[in-house]
Image (cartoon, rainbow, N blue to C red; front, side, top):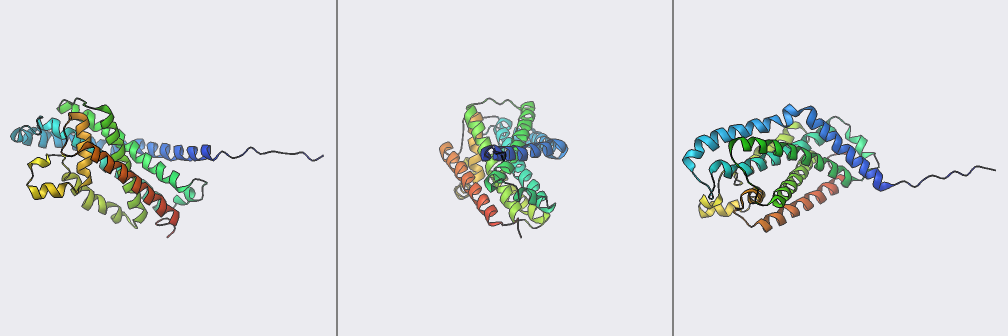
Length: 267
């Protein structure tokens, strides 16, 4: 009699979870392996900001929003580091995979594109959280931070990191060379961050500048995060979270759609 062999059905959920974990673990290993490039620069930059803007200029500025100037800018500096590092980690990692031609290994794997996008975005969140924690420690060396609402702090941090991680993924998809990888962070992300209320309250601006500021999405992210620490915000916190959640969903959908079409990966 012929032996009858049975094969256990493939658990797609387990396969996808394993693939997702593998991407995240690889990203974590990359971040830790080159910690001198991924974590230390943000800590050094934060020290310079506190020393120059907080201590020297802050003495002349005085109180801001009812708080010491160093205390006021601390949440903004933390969020600024989270934004730049979440974005930078994903764009560098995914474009590096394209440039090194090992993106094909992911494309031929049984992983759906939404898992690949989610894995890279989660890698950006990991770096954003690590750098955010580091800059928070640096901030505590210069000023006192009390937490007004812990849930708001973590929610704003997570949504912002996811949003800019997905933004970095889209940048990497369309980038053809390293110049295009650096173009958006230098000419779009940095100006929006500096005009996003990191160093000042929009109440100090003239009416026309304040109105323009409300079209800057980073203003809402910074202020939601600041509200979690200090309990003050220049914008509606509910509006900020709706904007962040909506941006994350739209960017995730766009990234998956472009991956399904092969944009930037099959050119």
